[in-house]
Structures are given as C-alpha cells and as structure tokens.
Length: 551
Image 1: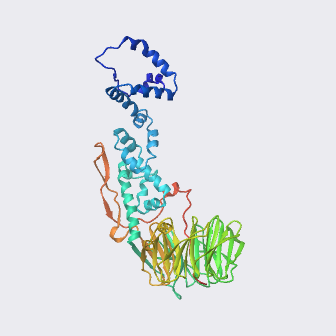
Image 2: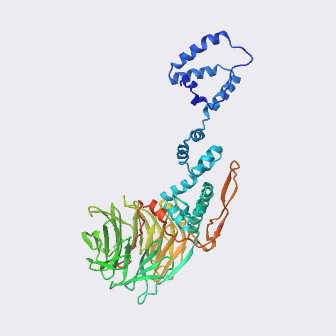
Image 3: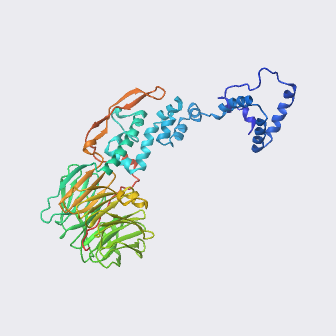
C-alpha cells in the first residue's frame, strides 16, 4: 500500500471528494504537527505491517467513524473497468474480456449499466458466442446448417443488406437454439420422429446388408450384388454399381473412393464420384464380412477366420501389411484407431491387437454365443451378439461394464456416440439406449432403454446415426430414415422476419424474433462460409458394421 499513489489523478479521478473529519471540531495543533510525519513513517512499512497497523487503528475508533471510513472506501473498491476501457477508446479490450462469458453471465452483464450493455451490443458478443458454439460443438454446427441460421454467422459477403442482423437478433436467437436442442433430446427419448422410406426394389434376392450416408447421398450394399447410390433429398436412386459376383456385405467411403467387400471374397475400390471400378483386391478365400479404413490404413476381416491389415498408398496401390490370425471362427467385424485394432468373431471372443505392431494384446470374454457387431471409440467397446445381448467394455482392462438385455433375437448392428447406443436386431427392432446411464453402475436395468422403434418388417442389418437421425437397412429391402429434428407435430424453424420493440434492459430499443413458422427443414448442406471456417476440422465419416455370416 503506497500513499504516493493517492496523488495520481488516474487512480482517484472517479472517487468523489469526501471529508471524513468531524465538521464541528477544529483541527488540533498536534494533528498539524504530527500527521505528515506519521504518514511518512507509514509509507516505509511493508504491506503486512501497514494492514496490521490499520486494523488496530480501526479497533480504536468509534462506530460512527467506521461508517464514515466505509463511505470513503466504497467508491475506491467499485471500479468500472469495462466502462473505463470503453471511455478510453479501448472498446476492443472490453469486448475481449466480456467475450469469455457464458450465456447466463452475459445476460446478467447486460443489466449492469448502459455502458456495459453498449459494449456487448456493439461488440456483437451474442453472435460471437453462437459462433464459438458452432465451431466447437458438432450438434450446434449441424443445427445451424439444418435450421439455416448459419447464413447469419461469421463474415458473410451479403448482397442483401436486410440479411445483416443486429446484436439483439442473436440475443433472442440464442435461447431459441437452446429450446431446439432440448426438444431434440425429448424427441429421441419419446420416439417423436418423421419417417422417410426408400424401397430398394432389388431384382433378385431382397435385402440391404450395409449402408453409409452423408448430407448429399446414401450408399447401400445389397444382397443382389449391387451398390446403389441414393440422392439424400429426393430419395431417388441416382447410380447403380455392378461388378461383384456375390452379396455386398460391407462398405465404407470417403471423398475419393468407395471400398466394398462381398461374399465373392473380393474387395473392390470405386471412384466415389463417377462410380468407375479402380481396383480389385484378392486375398481372402471366403466372404469379406467387414472392413474399415482410416488415414492410409485399411483392416478387413473374413469368414476365413483371418484379419488383413492393408497399406493404402493410393486407390490403385493397396498392399497387404500384415495378416492377423487367432480367431477360431469367422471374424464378423473389425474396428480400429491409432492404438488398437478390435475384432469380434463367431467364436464368442473379442480380440484386441496393437495397431502399429499388429501384436496381440488381450481377449475380451463374456458373450455366450457368436458376436455379430461392435464399435470401438474412446476406450469403450460396445458389442452385440447372437446371445441377444449387448455388452459395454473397457478396452484397457478388458472388463465388461454393463450387459444390456432387451432384444429377442441376434443383435446384428450397433453404433454409439457420447450420449446413446443404437442397436438393431433380427427381431426387426431398433433400440435406443442411454450410454451414460449404462456406464453408471448405480443405474437400474429398466432405465437403460429409452425407446424401441418397430418400423422395419424384417431383420435389421445395418444402421448409422448422428445427433439428428437414424438411417437403417433391413432384410425387408428398405432403407428407413428417422428424423428426430423435425417431427410432424413440431416442424418449426426460425422466421427471418423480425421487429423492433422496447428492450426490458434500460429502455434501449432491441430487435426481437417475432415467431416461428411451419416449414420443411433446410437441407443439411454445409455452406461455403462455414466450410471455410471449419476447413481444418476433418469431416466425420461413419463406418459400417458387419455381416452376421459365420455366426
């Protein structure tokens, strides 16, 4: 504490002048003689000594003096640093500070004073908060695309000036988004969805064994030996790829190629845009039941009980790196990341291998019959079996964390994310499970299954899902799309029309969203602006689950 700072105008220029001396008594001679001397001595002490002295000084004062001292200290302790920065022409620093606040804190900060509200409004901090959410959260990103409010975010080159919104627009948009997200979660739990159906019209044998989708297309592998590509908007078949001599049991694609595996024991590589056959891989001696590829590595498995690890240099240059042998029956499914390869077999076991060295690590035991499907991510493995159960595993220690029971027949396909597990079975049912509850040992078994969907009329062979939808295929020769974002009873989106009304905050005019209008959901297409901003983020490409052959 340095009293020399008391003479600094920048320190006390906002503190009103106050006289804390008793006005009815004149200053004594002793005060005039010794006060300067005492202050000089006080300034030579360290902080702790000064505080200790002031504490004792206050203890020797009367209560009414404490009140006067408090009235002098209070303005010194109340520092409007945001207003001060703004008045000094440093609005960008004030905006930077307030830009770290969450929505509730930002809402409270608007109520402090006019200056703070002005900083938030001029800095477009509600818009920036929404943009941070879109960049960091896939749910917000997907919602911005589907609800079409992404056109109001980031730096847009707008021809129509009417599309340029003020900060108040974003302030009212934010709670609407939260309500949309809450309603989406309710729809998942209650089974409130809009259903779209694609009849595949197979020529000979009926059934859709595998699929993968994105915002523009669905690619499916059929029992009639063909690969069919469907337009995501019109649900019409736009291309048919032929070449396999057996059922197409598994597939995966990225922005360059489609790779398929078949019961004819071949793996074929196709150009994803033209459909041209680029390569045919011959290694397995029986049906190729599943495959996965990531970052130049592909893993395939077969009814011949082996797992092949491939090096992918280009679509036409793919070579075997290692063959893994250890299962005693058909290997129905594989999954992997940079650390582990995980495989499951009709021999009732799940085996874990080191991705780099291809060395065996451990075996997960628990299923009572053959395992048809699994997914591995974030140290968790979820598997489905012909014992009609689903098991959740810790891959590091090999422990079974939970057994999910509810399906009446073989569990053929399984997918999970950070919130839920979705499973499909030969009983024709798709079940939605609460993953977080499943990982909590205190949860009751009856609380784990949130919803059962019974729209398929045949065995469910394959499914994939994201935050907004499930897409599944079946022996009934159909592909079903369950859209949870826009169920028929709640098809709402943000209206572009807005009106200005008096703000509840300080009487300042604000823009308010006037309402929602029924409409069809905007197509889930990433706008050019969002794509540029997010160009460093890898697109999420979901992969396929296995054929159940050999179980």
